[in-house]
Length: 269
Image (cartoon, rainbow, N blue to C red; front, side, top):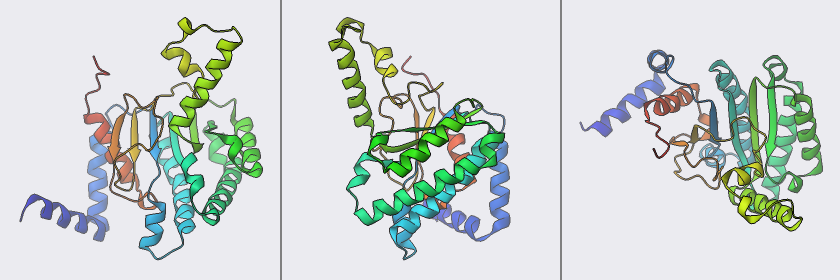
């Protein structure tokens, strides 16, 4: 039996036997508990539609289950004392999907934002909420709830929950460039003054205490960033996991953190 067959066999045992799963989870925890934790985790929540297709369900059912999974993720990250998480939930390109699917996603966004406003964990843990992206392109009802969530948590600074919605990395850089060009035209900035720091001041993430994620995790098995935090992730560790987002477990988060702890981060030095 080759090593791939052995791994598959072990994976089946772990899935089928809760006791083995628990034992593996405990062993994994002891591997990461004393290591350096990432301060900022970026997550590309991918695979909702494929999960729904796999279970013979409509696409937006996958989005609903995936949105529910975010509640678990928040709890796991709070337990780990991860300072910030940025979730890629809806890209600018996603607007090109069938209108019925986009409408259902916006309804889910409304529902979840409403729940956030009532969630005691947000207040108890002082979680600062921010949406990044071309927010003006969203339905007014979603924009209103975003404003309410941001306003009600603006003084919190223990943890940060950033939601990339109607977001695109290229769009972010274009928008920053336009603002910088306006500053130059108005005489408030010269071309010689523009450097990396200047650009960062005009990105959607400019007011975050740590805009660059230490690690970016993408679910579903796809191995690309798809425009997520293109500027900010220049030196982020990348971790691609072969699990659809609705099936993401605490174990998968811990595995990603173990991957992060095993990397040697030199930032080009």
